[in-house]
Image 1 (cartoon, rainbow, N blue to C red):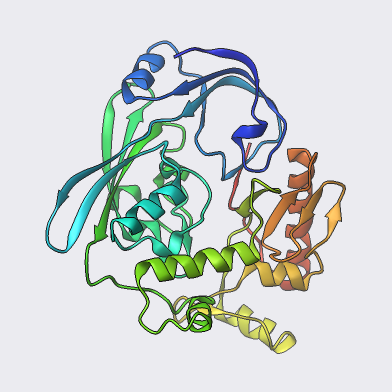
Image 2 (cartoon, rainbow, N blue to C red):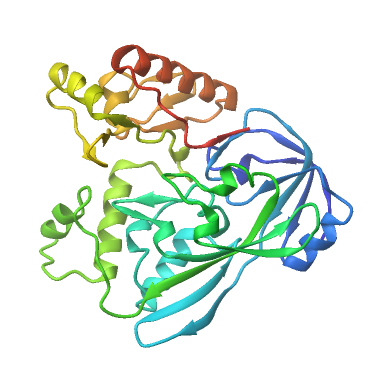
Length: 335
């Protein structure tokens, strides 16, 4: 465990933003983290760097959580219980699970980031949220250095939300996540988005979890840019949930507006459609821009600063509010 000085974080965030860490350390075990916390409290936690927009240099000690490993805690005829350490790459974990014929996370294929960050925003895609398979979240309490465990209920999961984004923010460092996955009789979710269409195109009638994963990967690659090729953090905004009365008003003006009913009184509207309708899709402002294929994704074409991307986000929010009376909420963490 060596603390380095003046380290570039360009390769540690998927936006590829050039900012520096005054001090930097990579942690590979829970013990190392506990030892570090006995002498360091003013720290900045960095995992996969996939859900953040860095707008300034980090003057705190940047602690890169690089704890890896997957273990089987228990299993029965129908399910397997896993503990996956925070530093494991999320997509690699999904592929590993599918290779073992463990089901439940196939719809979450190709989401960038590491396992340790998945509970924070309750990652989700194509009708599935990670809260549906999480059994526990293990974390170190910063003040005491003690290892604690949160049950699924204690995580207070919501839409792209959890206790770790609210009252527990900054108080705990996630070190591992527990999952319950199916071993047979997998409950496939193929009704959301274009999964059924993709499976049909491949002439797959009775899909496996791998087939669903492959379909999701194909769809995401066609719509979303690879962070290794163009800097981005996936979906930049949350899909807004609005009341039925506002939706009906908007529907009169925009009959084609897509929607997903949440309840009798609430409707989810795709943020990407709103952004595209407002004229931002494919627009570029210097090296900051909106992706040409998916308006929900803001991109760094090379040398954009975090502040330039954030300014673009604020302009989009203002335009959406003017046109639709909807307040778009940013999904990524702006630092």
